[in-house]
Amino acid sequence: MTTQFRLCSFTRTSIGLTAGLALLGLGGCDGHDVSIPLVPVAAANVVHHQPGDIDSLLAAASGEPAGQEIGGSSGAVADLAGNAECGVSIYHVVYRTHDPAGAPATASEGVMIPTGTSANCTGDRPVLLYSHGTTTKKSYNTADPLHTPEALMVEAFFAAHGYIVIMPNYLGYDVSNLAYHPYLNAEVQAHDMIDGLQAGLGQVTSAGGVSSSGKLFIAGYSQGGHVAMATDRVLERDFAGQFPVTAAAPMSGPYNLVKFGDTVVAPEGTVNIGATLFMPYLLRSYQNSYGNIYTSPSEVYQPPFDQSAPTLFPTDAPVDTLMTDGLLPNDPTFRLLFGPGGLLTDSFRQSYPTTTFRAALQTNTVLGWNPKAPMALCGGMDDPTVYFSNAVDAQADFASRAIAVPLWDLEVKSSLPTGRTYSEVYDAFQLAKLQAGSNVQMTYHGVLVPPFCMALTRGFFATFLDQ
Image 1 (cartoon, helix red, strand yellow):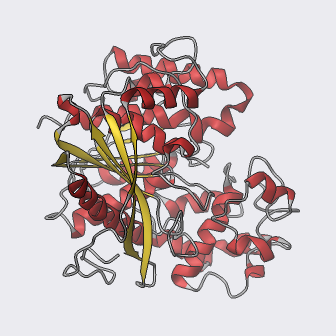
Image 2 (image 1 turned 135 degrees about the vertical axis):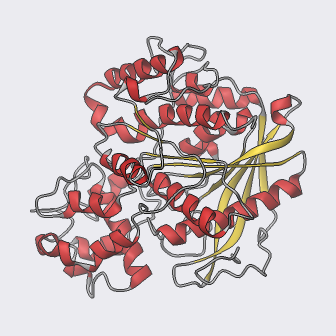
């Protein structure tokens, strides 16, 4: 079954996205205290982009000529974004949250506020709470779109078209005082996002010019898809009165985390592209969160990686350098997880079905709940990094309780919303894959899929703006 809705206009070209490969509490649970108001901990730095600046940045990032229509002979990503309607002021906000142990911690975020005189850029504006994809970069900062491609894409697709965007960097990144990142810890990351939402809305009030319309949208890609799903769940469970969700659109996320782990780590499993980056993050996150994943790193990691990998990420050292220096397996596909020269021990793989690591994956699987706000899922069937079965399983899980959630598969035209525009989206995605040539597998998850799902998400959200 397809859904018909309006997709916003297109006018620009492709941008690469590195996404495959953020307090004092708000209340509800995990030690959060509703009686303590949450405010930014420092005055926010700000940069201002005019509409032309955003268009130019997007064109420069794409490396392709501006102004081509979707379905043209070259990439179509910035075509999907469309010419910027609004300028954007981007604030770097530092706020308080909690680490997995419940101790106070700080995190930071980018808060994008539309500016200008157009009716779509003034007055009461919708809010997008956006969760970003996996990055190894410790200094990752969504308030700096010039050096953060995913933030630039979100700015171009949403903030430049009238959305207030709140985009946490997550605990452990940028100026956060936490020494590690609680990667795919569903509850902790959800509360981090919600604390960032509260602080971000405070920044909007302080900045003036526009205000929240009360419409709150949740979206995220890859790791951010999992975080978006977890955030939607916690918002509806614990904060429905304070922050009612209008609609959500998780994209290409590992929702069925335990099955994903079974597929990758189990003795008969198939290792995904990026596994040697994701596994150190997961193991460190769950070891710090639960304290029981291993007694010694050598129980999990092969030498010499038992000396480097347990505390490796996040880091500002380039991944190529980490491999050259012998801190990670020297495999550009990041699939050398087991066997000679691999990251993890074969004994860990053999014992995986009964490990506390698998139990942690089960704890952080974000299925088995009932979203009240409308939701849509998006991805690509051939994703070699975050397997599309995650989205299929999520849709089926919701359907088992009579909750209809559309799933847009960019490889299946009939799964997309109806209309000529969506046929063109499908055709443009197929063309982008063709142009990627032999690099299609390595770019599928992080470069090819995200902007097309983002365009479909914006169209989905647009159906709720006038309600």
